[in-house]
Image (cartoon, helix red, strand yellow):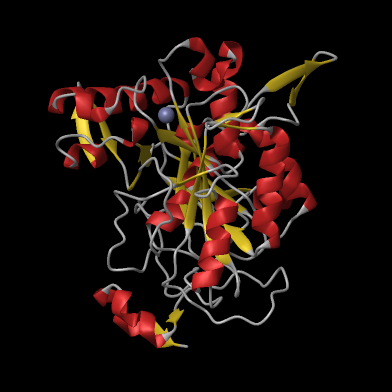
Amino acid sequence: MSILAFSYHNRDEWVYKIKNLAIVEPKTVKIFILRKKLPSTLIIYAMNTLKQICFPLIFVPALWTQMSCSNSNGSKNTTENTTSPGSVQTEGTAPVPQVRKTGAFVPNELGRIMVLEYHLIGYPEDVWRRTPENFRKDLQMLYDHNYYPVSVKDLAAGQVNVPAGMTPFAMTFDDSSAGQFRYLEKNGKLELDPDCALGIMEAFKKQHPDFPITASFYVLPAIKPKLRLFAQPEYQKQKLAWLIAHGYEIGNHGWFHVPLHKLDDAGVQKHLAMFVKEIKAFIPDYEVKSLALPLGMHAKNRILESKGSFEGTNYKHDAVFLVGSVTSVSPYDKDFNPLAIQRVQAGDTPTGPAAFTKQLDQSGNRFISDGDPNTISAPLKMKARLKPVLEKKFVAK
Ligand SMILES: [Zn+2]
């Protein structure tokens, strides 16, 4: 028996939610992604594959509720960029409802954005390490300054749907250290460490439902133990599954962090494909969609960063991230390249998120949303920066 399901959620979340509920094996689920929400009741049809007869099986409002609530992106317009079999494409996209109050603002959707880059979370504060307290402070700063989280995938695809007056930002973590995702055992039960990055983000999200934070984790599957898949070997698979089930992304950071410029073409493909193979050994259905270049170093043949194969394992990345200390141009900017997106290294430095926020506000060059995902609003003087194919969507402010 197989299950047909219709959802506006992404496929991976669906598969894991269904698996967790032990209704069926994920392989028997066929997902049809919709861009708009169906009527409030979840409809699951079971199909008798032998007789090829389709009939209604169950109506599970509770399941629908659980899935809706668990969409950590918070956006009802989360969609797959890849076309799933039977996917339905609809015109237009509904705006995200207004959440936080903003003062007067002029939309500037051709302004700059930040993709934040974190490494270690722990003690003491250092170049590559934020303390839990400082990480909380960063989230509060972003919240107070009208930032709104978006996924790396949506950012790279130019699907930036945030409320009016807000500035989109994306969050990334490199190198899968324990401080990013740590389980604690308490009275025989596993708990998310409230001082690891995920514990902090989940708590912040609970306190601020209008800040649906998500993040991409560029993990390492075959490196030394303290950086290998969050450094608790007994929970590797569980952690990867948890991330996917809670709307976070797992991204490629190489097999064991060899900078790609040191490898020949075959080596680049081997290291990126072996990453995919290692992740699929834990999570067979998961499709890795983005890459953070180890040490930010490009391959000699850059086309192999986004696509290649090794011994029958293929990889395809829709977004590639650099290591950096620079804000990114808007996804609507003519110079935006999803295969070379700049990042901002977290920290209380002149090139950290707080300092950039100040600079962008002083220069008036911060991306500020008009709240309508179907138009691109900006001051007329910015129009020269627009991708020519987006000309029809431009609204001068
Ligand atoms: Zn790294």
